[in-house]
Image (cartoon, rainbow, N blue to C red; front, top):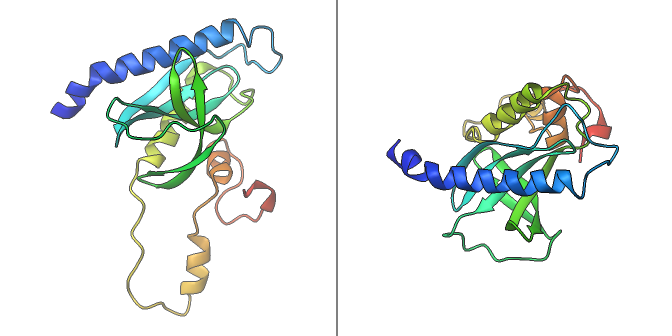
Amino acid sequence: MLDALIDAPDRDRAAQKLEAVFRDIAATRMAGVSLLNPALQVEAVGFRLWRDDWVGVLITPWFMNLICLPTPASAREALASGTRLDVALPAGEYEFLHAHEDALGVYLTSSLFSPMFAFPDQASAREVALAVLLELFKPAEPTPTASPSPVAGIAAKLEQPLSRRGFLGGLLGGTRRGEADSSLER
């Protein structure tokens, strides 16, 4: 708990800077763009220290993304914007893209939703962002070591992880685990 208190000012500064940069983008580059949800605003949600990054969700009127902001201790190499990188989180590995904003520097981003018209208000978007973070920071369930039973093959298929789109669709009432819809798979 003490570590969380020590890191809180740095975390808050990082989240505030992220919000300020994207509020400026909303007011300038995104002003008047038709894919903006007017019920939403820029908000950094649930940022926490994970290894050498501040990890959380950025809500904007045009997207909701998982964001990794490097701390000063980060040894990650700055790569060209758009370069893909898999990041290990407690629930598994997720694909991120390198990104850069002059006022922010280098960061990693992973799209969760875009556009944002499925969200009627900021509270709904924040609720989904917090649910995503809760799931991403749950440790992956250990694989069983016992010998497989005759129904293990069927059970294993039912327990396969969902794609990011399938998982997120489930949060909004979309396809659930076990339903066959290959259009939702990556």
